[in-house]
Length: 384
Ligand SMILES: C[S@@+](CC[C@H](N)C(=O)[O-])C[C@H]1O[C@@H](n2cnc3c(N)ncnc32)[C@H](O)[C@@H]1O
Ligand code: SF4
Image (cartoon, rainbow, N blue to C red):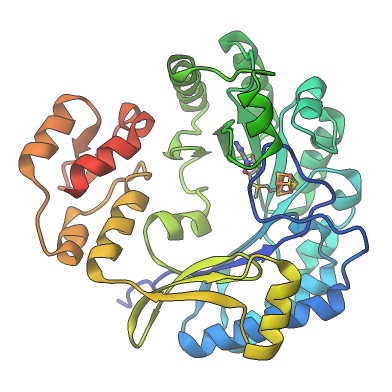
């Protein structure tokens, strides 16, 4: 029997947004003149050709258009990027092709064209089902528009998911329980549920520092996380990663590529990648500024300003950080082969006694739900 082909993902970053949300530290930029997409897309075509030459002969098993706001892409732009990927690498017939979309009516109007271009999974940035909270988060849609976009997406795409941000200022357990149950009633088989994090360099960071609002403390956040687990489990949408919940078989394959520490190419401004070349596994990162990235891609054939060959020890560290996020757990032998040393059995026993780690009957290790809440400490204990 032929083995399953190894997963190989492509992350495509579209760096533009209509407005900058006050909590967001993603590589997103607002431009006051419309972006000339027909010209800008040539940067992606060049970068795809260049990266395919670095890691030739791979079949692409997942593609993820993230942002920024990729639902601002004209369908022709997306088509050209997919055509370049198909030309230089080849796309598996069963590839998952996801697009992040903001749920305004304008963007929902483009869904049919995205589907025709090959997108088979959409992830909507709903963030909240409460108008006052959407206002607080600086979003350009209201709850009714979000619900309408979910309905439209459900009719057009075989697979849909949406994102919510919880652990917001003053959010009670009772309020979150009602909102999450409403969300599950609207959801298909996948949800991403993120706790609000206050990122340095964002307007929320300054407002929070000045005491304009408070977010739940560690205990309250843990209670909200546990409530989330209880509700999603009761609806057969268990966590398969810290913040991602899905029915069996409906996990996002592309995100699994990251957490299983498989290869992916990162295309576009600010995109990161991990690709295995003749020399070994390489960490890549592209120039973050969209115009500088495009200029560099035109001169050098790519916009990467980082191409670091990773040592086996660095790979082992990255593998651990990624694998521990997964509910399926991981094979310790892979870490041990890369790091050249076994895990310390005393540390494993200690973490198991604290209830943060467990050994599965297969011999794989996995973080428990309590371990997810203190993952950095679990990683630090295991990595020494
Ligand atoms: C690349 S972002 C956004 C995609 C899309 N532009 C949008 O806003 O819907 C992916 C997701 O990360 C989450 N996110 C971004 N910043 C966050 C923060 N500071 N705290 C919690 N979640 C955040 C949001 O749920 C968002 O949908
Ligand atoms: S949250 Fe999404 S829409 Fe808002 S600035 Fe960030 S990437 Fe853009």
